[in-house]
Amino acid sequence: MPELPEVETSRRGIEPYLLNKKVTDVIIRQKQLRWPIPASLKKQLINQKIKSVDRRGKYILLRTDAGTVILHLGMSGSLRILNKSINLEKHDHFDICFSHKVLRLRDPRRFGAVLWTKSDPLLHKLLKDLGPEPLEDEFTAEYLYEQSRNRKIAIKTFLMNSHIVVGVGNIYANESLFAAGINPKRTACNISLARYRKLVPAIKSILTASIEQGGTTLKDFINEEGKPGYFQQTLAVYGRAAEACNHCGSVIKKITQTQRSTFYCSRCQK
Image (cartoon, rainbow, N blue to C red; front, top):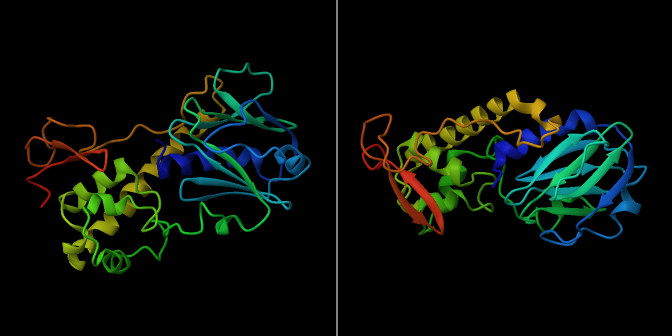
Protein backbone atom coordinates (compact mmCIF):
# COMPACT_ATOMS: atom_id res chain seq x y z
CA MET A 1 0.00 0.00 0.00
CA PRO A 2 1.33 3.49 -0.78
CA GLU A 3 2.37 5.15 2.48
CA LEU A 4 2.77 8.83 3.33
CA PRO A 5 6.10 9.39 1.50
CA GLU A 6 4.72 7.72 -1.63
CA VAL A 7 1.54 9.81 -1.50
CA GLU A 8 3.54 13.00 -0.93
CA THR A 9 5.80 12.06 -3.83
CA SER A 10 2.66 11.55 -5.96
CA ARG A 11 1.34 14.96 -4.90
CA ARG A 12 4.62 16.67 -5.77
CA GLY A 13 4.83 14.77 -9.04
CA ILE A 14 1.43 15.82 -10.36
CA GLU A 15 1.27 19.35 -8.93
CA PRO A 16 3.25 21.21 -11.62
CA TYR A 17 1.01 19.80 -14.36
CA LEU A 18 -2.30 20.59 -12.63
CA LEU A 19 -1.84 23.89 -10.81
CA ASN A 20 -3.97 26.66 -12.35
CA LYS A 21 -4.94 24.41 -15.25
CA LYS A 22 -8.56 24.21 -16.43
CA VAL A 23 -10.37 20.85 -16.48
CA THR A 24 -11.66 20.10 -20.00
CA ASP A 25 -13.18 16.67 -19.37
CA VAL A 26 -13.70 13.96 -16.78
CA ILE A 27 -13.77 10.32 -17.89
CA ILE A 28 -15.12 7.61 -15.55
CA ARG A 29 -14.52 4.11 -16.90
CA GLN A 30 -15.14 2.24 -13.66
CA LYS A 31 -17.51 4.06 -11.32
CA GLN A 32 -17.24 1.55 -8.48
CA LEU A 33 -13.98 1.87 -6.57
CA ARG A 34 -13.93 1.59 -2.79
CA TRP A 35 -16.91 3.93 -2.93
CA PRO A 36 -18.83 4.95 -6.09
CA ILE A 37 -17.37 7.90 -7.98
CA PRO A 38 -20.04 10.63 -7.77
CA ALA A 39 -22.13 10.70 -10.94
CA SER A 40 -22.18 14.50 -10.84
CA LEU A 41 -18.40 14.86 -10.78
CA LYS A 42 -18.05 15.53 -14.50
CA LYS A 43 -20.61 18.35 -14.39
CA GLN A 44 -19.06 19.81 -11.23
CA LEU A 45 -15.45 19.73 -12.39
CA ILE A 46 -15.44 20.70 -16.07
CA ASN A 47 -14.19 24.27 -16.66
CA GLN A 48 -12.86 24.52 -13.09
CA LYS A 49 -9.23 25.46 -12.48
CA ILE A 50 -7.16 23.45 -10.03
CA LYS A 51 -6.24 26.05 -7.40
CA SER A 52 -4.08 23.80 -5.21
CA VAL A 53 -2.84 20.22 -4.93
CA ASP A 54 -2.69 19.37 -1.23
CA ARG A 55 -2.33 16.30 0.96
CA ARG A 56 -3.96 15.29 4.24
CA GLY A 57 -2.69 11.97 5.52
CA LYS A 58 -2.88 9.62 2.55
CA TYR A 59 -5.51 11.69 0.74
CA ILE A 60 -4.66 14.05 -2.14
CA LEU A 61 -6.91 17.11 -2.40
CA LEU A 62 -7.47 18.87 -5.74
CA ARG A 63 -9.09 22.16 -4.77
CA THR A 64 -11.19 24.29 -7.13
CA ASP A 65 -13.54 27.23 -6.58
CA ALA A 66 -16.52 24.86 -6.87
CA GLY A 67 -15.25 22.19 -4.50
CA THR A 68 -12.53 19.62 -3.91
CA VAL A 69 -11.69 16.25 -5.45
CA ILE A 70 -10.53 13.83 -2.74
CA LEU A 71 -8.25 11.09 -4.11
CA HIS A 72 -6.99 8.00 -2.31
CA LEU A 73 -4.69 5.42 -3.90
CA GLY A 74 -6.00 2.46 -1.91
CA MET A 75 -3.86 -0.68 -1.88
CA SER A 76 -2.34 -0.55 -5.35
CA GLY A 77 -3.38 2.67 -7.05
CA SER A 78 -1.13 5.17 -8.78
CA LEU A 79 -1.48 8.52 -10.52
CA ARG A 80 0.16 9.42 -13.81
CA ILE A 81 0.43 12.53 -15.97
CA LEU A 82 0.12 11.34 -19.56
CA ASN A 83 -0.46 12.55 -23.10
CA LYS A 84 -4.03 12.01 -24.28
CA SER A 85 -2.80 9.72 -27.04
CA ILE A 86 -1.38 7.12 -24.65
CA ASN A 87 -3.20 3.80 -24.92
CA LEU A 88 -5.35 2.68 -22.03
CA GLU A 89 -4.37 -0.18 -19.77
CA LYS A 90 -6.79 -2.63 -18.17
CA HIS A 91 -7.01 -0.90 -14.80
CA ASP A 92 -7.08 2.74 -15.96
CA HIS A 93 -10.37 3.68 -14.31
CA PHE A 94 -10.48 7.46 -14.16
CA ASP A 95 -9.13 10.52 -15.99
CA ILE A 96 -9.18 14.24 -15.34
CA CYS A 97 -8.37 15.87 -18.68
CA PHE A 98 -6.68 19.18 -19.35
CA SER A 99 -5.79 20.85 -22.63
CA HIS A 100 -2.21 19.63 -22.39
CA LYS A 101 -2.24 16.40 -20.38
CA VAL A 102 -4.36 13.80 -18.59
CA LEU A 103 -4.24 12.87 -14.89
CA ARG A 104 -4.96 9.12 -14.87
CA LEU A 105 -5.77 6.87 -11.94
CA ARG A 106 -4.72 3.26 -12.33
CA ASP A 107 -6.08 0.98 -9.58
CA PRO A 108 -5.87 -2.79 -10.14
CA ARG A 109 -7.55 -3.73 -6.85
CA ARG A 110 -10.12 -0.91 -6.92
CA PHE A 111 -9.61 0.02 -3.25
CA GLY A 112 -8.86 3.62 -4.14
CA ALA A 113 -11.32 6.49 -4.04
CA VAL A 114 -12.42 9.51 -6.09
CA LEU A 115 -14.80 11.69 -4.08
CA TRP A 116 -16.13 15.23 -4.30
CA THR A 117 -17.11 17.76 -1.67
CA LYS A 118 -18.32 21.35 -1.91
CA SER A 119 -17.50 21.93 1.75
CA ASP A 120 -14.17 22.21 3.54
CA PRO A 121 -12.48 18.88 2.70
CA LEU A 122 -10.79 18.80 6.10
CA LEU A 123 -14.27 18.44 7.62
CA HIS A 124 -15.18 15.50 5.38
CA LYS A 125 -16.08 12.38 7.35
CA LEU A 126 -12.95 10.60 6.11
CA LEU A 127 -10.59 13.39 7.18
CA LYS A 128 -12.11 15.23 10.13
CA ASP A 129 -10.94 12.81 12.83
CA LEU A 130 -7.41 12.25 11.54
CA GLY A 131 -4.51 12.84 13.90
CA PRO A 132 -1.74 15.39 13.31
CA GLU A 133 0.66 15.20 10.40
CA PRO A 134 3.91 13.57 11.61
CA LEU A 135 6.11 16.24 10.03
CA GLU A 136 4.26 19.19 11.54
CA ASP A 137 5.22 20.95 14.76
CA GLU A 138 2.16 19.74 16.68
CA PHE A 139 3.42 16.15 16.49
CA THR A 140 5.75 16.06 19.48
CA ALA A 141 7.05 13.53 21.98
CA GLU A 142 4.87 15.14 24.64
CA TYR A 143 1.77 14.77 22.45
CA LEU A 144 2.50 11.10 21.71
CA TYR A 145 3.26 10.39 25.37
CA GLU A 146 -0.04 11.92 26.51
CA GLN A 147 -2.00 10.04 23.86
CA SER A 148 -0.39 6.76 24.92
CA ARG A 149 -1.48 6.90 28.57
CA ASN A 150 -3.90 4.05 29.32
CA ARG A 151 -3.35 2.64 25.81
CA LYS A 152 -2.71 -1.04 26.50
CA ILE A 153 -1.81 -1.92 22.94
CA ALA A 154 1.52 -2.61 21.28
CA ILE A 155 3.45 0.52 20.36
CA LYS A 156 3.58 -0.42 16.68
CA THR A 157 -0.20 -0.79 16.54
CA PHE A 158 -0.53 2.52 18.38
CA LEU A 159 1.66 4.33 15.82
CA MET A 160 -0.41 3.00 12.93
CA ASN A 161 -3.66 4.41 14.32
CA SER A 162 -4.51 7.32 12.00
CA HIS A 163 -6.51 8.99 14.78
CA ILE A 164 -3.24 9.29 16.74
CA VAL A 165 -0.97 10.33 13.87
CA VAL A 166 -1.49 10.05 10.12
CA GLY A 167 0.74 8.36 7.64
CA VAL A 168 2.96 6.17 9.81
CA GLY A 169 2.19 2.98 7.94
CA ASN A 170 3.62 -0.47 8.43
CA ILE A 171 7.01 0.05 6.78
CA TYR A 172 7.76 3.31 8.56
CA ALA A 173 6.48 2.12 11.94
CA ASN A 174 8.91 -0.81 11.74
CA GLU A 175 11.80 1.37 10.68
CA SER A 176 11.14 4.14 13.21
CA LEU A 177 10.90 1.75 16.15
CA PHE A 178 14.19 0.19 15.13
CA ALA A 179 15.85 3.60 14.86
CA ALA A 180 14.56 4.50 18.34
CA GLY A 181 15.57 1.13 19.84
CA ILE A 182 12.01 0.28 20.94
CA ASN A 183 10.63 -3.25 20.76
CA PRO A 184 7.41 -3.19 18.68
CA LYS A 185 5.72 -5.51 21.19
CA ARG A 186 6.07 -3.06 24.09
CA THR A 187 2.82 -1.63 25.41
CA ALA A 188 2.38 2.02 24.42
CA CYS A 189 1.42 3.15 27.92
CA ASN A 190 4.58 1.61 29.41
CA ILE A 191 6.98 3.65 27.27
CA SER A 192 8.55 6.64 29.00
CA LEU A 193 8.56 10.22 27.77
CA ALA A 194 12.32 9.96 27.34
CA ARG A 195 11.88 7.10 24.89
CA TYR A 196 9.13 8.97 23.00
CA ARG A 197 11.65 11.79 22.69
CA LYS A 198 13.78 9.38 20.67
CA LEU A 199 10.87 7.91 18.72
CA VAL A 200 9.31 11.13 17.40
CA PRO A 201 12.55 12.48 15.85
CA ALA A 202 13.13 9.02 14.35
CA ILE A 203 9.70 9.10 12.69
CA LYS A 204 10.27 12.62 11.36
CA SER A 205 13.78 11.82 10.12
CA ILE A 206 12.84 8.60 8.34
CA LEU A 207 9.75 10.09 6.67
CA THR A 208 11.66 13.21 5.61
CA ALA A 209 14.51 11.18 4.13
CA SER A 210 12.04 8.97 2.27
CA ILE A 211 10.23 11.95 0.78
CA GLU A 212 13.54 13.53 -0.25
CA GLN A 213 14.58 10.30 -1.96
CA GLY A 214 11.23 10.26 -3.73
CA GLY A 215 12.03 13.60 -5.26
CA THR A 216 14.61 11.95 -7.50
CA THR A 217 11.86 9.93 -9.22
CA LEU A 218 9.33 12.69 -9.87
CA LYS A 219 10.03 12.43 -13.60
CA ASP A 220 8.47 8.95 -13.47
CA PHE A 221 5.04 10.53 -13.06
CA ILE A 222 5.11 11.25 -16.77
CA ASN A 223 6.51 7.81 -17.57
CA GLU A 224 4.34 6.34 -20.33
CA GLU A 225 4.99 2.84 -19.04
CA GLY A 226 3.03 3.72 -15.92
CA LYS A 227 5.63 2.39 -13.53
CA PRO A 228 5.39 3.61 -9.93
CA GLY A 229 7.27 6.84 -9.36
CA TYR A 230 8.34 5.75 -5.89
CA PHE A 231 11.85 5.55 -4.59
CA GLN A 232 13.91 2.53 -3.72
CA GLN A 233 13.86 2.38 0.06
CA THR A 234 16.87 1.59 2.19
CA LEU A 235 15.37 -0.49 4.98
CA ALA A 236 17.04 -1.57 8.21
CA VAL A 237 14.55 -4.24 9.31
CA TYR A 238 11.40 -4.29 7.18
CA GLY A 239 11.31 -7.33 4.89
CA ARG A 240 14.63 -8.65 6.26
CA ALA A 241 13.45 -11.59 8.38
CA ALA A 242 16.23 -14.10 9.14
CA GLU A 243 18.91 -11.69 7.88
CA ALA A 244 21.61 -10.22 10.08
CA CYS A 245 20.97 -6.91 11.79
CA ASN A 246 23.24 -4.26 10.29
CA HIS A 247 23.99 -2.91 13.77
CA CYS A 248 24.66 -5.95 15.93
CA GLY A 249 24.61 -8.99 13.65
CA SER A 250 21.69 -10.69 15.41
CA VAL A 251 18.99 -12.35 13.33
CA ILE A 252 16.06 -10.09 12.51
CA LYS A 253 12.79 -11.58 13.71
CA LYS A 254 9.35 -11.50 12.10
CA ILE A 255 6.01 -11.66 13.91
CA THR A 256 2.42 -10.71 13.05
CA GLN A 257 0.63 -7.86 14.82
CA THR A 258 -2.95 -6.97 13.94
CA GLN A 259 -2.59 -8.94 10.70
CA ARG A 260 0.50 -6.98 9.63
CA SER A 261 4.09 -8.21 9.46
CA THR A 262 6.46 -6.80 12.07
CA PHE A 263 10.25 -6.98 11.78
CA TYR A 264 12.66 -6.19 14.61
CA CYS A 265 15.98 -6.94 16.26
CA SER A 266 15.51 -8.29 19.78
CA ARG A 267 19.02 -7.20 20.79
CA CYS A 268 18.83 -3.60 19.52
CA GLN A 269 15.17 -3.03 20.43
CA LYS A 270 14.12 -3.28 24.07
